[in-house]
Length: 334
Image (cartoon, rainbow, N blue to C red; front, side, top):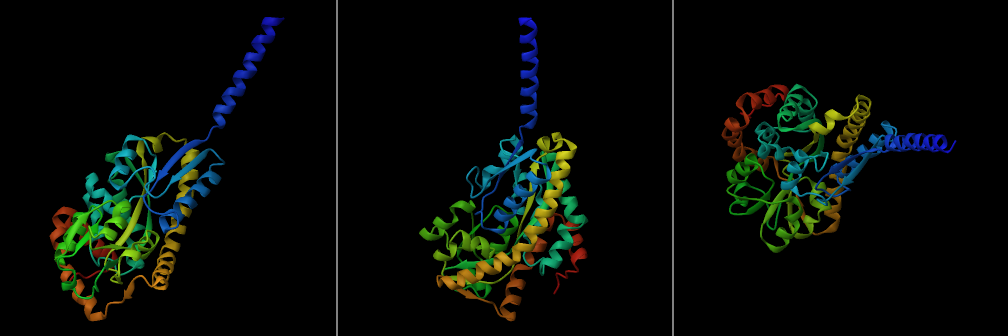
């Protein structure tokens, strides 16, 4: 009887082992470069919560904020190699990847507000842009708002001539480079995680960011002046390694897609709220003087930056830019 008992025990042990293996959750590493208390940081945590719930524990999401895994220039390559599974990079990051059309989001003053923006991110134009990532091994899943950008420096920024000669930190984007040059500033491409120190030591003079990034990275502590220009938009695309995503079981993907939809609604809802709170916190700190440009000053800035649209049309695609104008009702001549 002993051989029989041993065989039976082995079978039971094998079944138990397979059950344990089947119960092991799929680990999704989600990396990003901003603080946990920013709109993106909070949205990533909301996605984790929803993804794990909607897949009944079949998925475990590990969120790595603040460049703890990869910096700006490293994260996209890490995703393509499968070292990380999901990212939410700023839309400017897709230009260096070879999908220059995303740089349309960087064009100054192309969106008059969130209503204009969402006609693109929730419409056919936005969906078409996400589809262009697939040949790069990247699955585009959703757009998350951060907000509209302000300018900061250690001098008041009111008129276009105030930017002349300033070394302005930017993320990697040919459009944003052209924007700064149109203001006679000197663009300095630099990782987000290094910006505070660069501002503190005078390596750069100023930068542009939504208020939530400015505040959570404490940049306001080393910038005496903040101008509420709202000249450009900073948003993110939630993306995944395409090979990893495509291999997921259909029911798991369905749960993740539901989690993405809800976390996207959450992200977009809190974006303006978080930026408003951050701006109030900057004001309360007394470290930076907040300035709201007059209508004439805003018009002067718009006029100075208008040529960037035409200058970048060959790079981004004139047809794409015109499709955004058509969808939002934007008139570049005004």
